[in-house]
Image 1 (cartoon, rainbow, N blue to C red):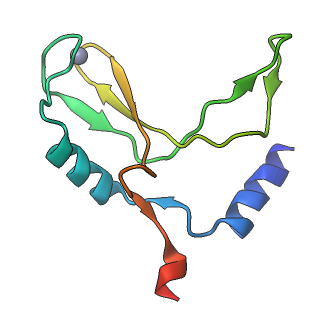
Image 2 (cartoon, rainbow, N blue to C red):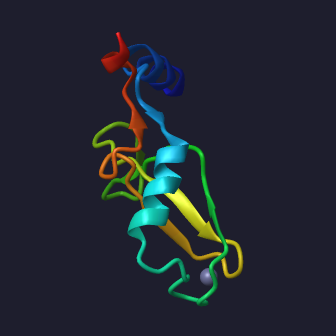
Length: 100
Ligand SMILES: [Zn+2]
């Protein structure tokens, strides 16, 4: 199942790739404060991969498939607070189809 998902993701969505520089630029422009809401410091690291939460069923089972909700983790290196940013909302996803 995981192998299938990997193949589907690569073959059907070759253009879905994080534009890391765009993500960092947008965060720097739009975050009116860079201070961590938990500890007050400005010491963040931005992950370079898009991830998605996994749905949990009523029987506490993990369910592969369903809705894809893209998130990139931004972690405070002082206290460990994690903020999730949706790269689609801030257009930080590369669309290579436009180049063709
Ligand atoms: Zn913090």
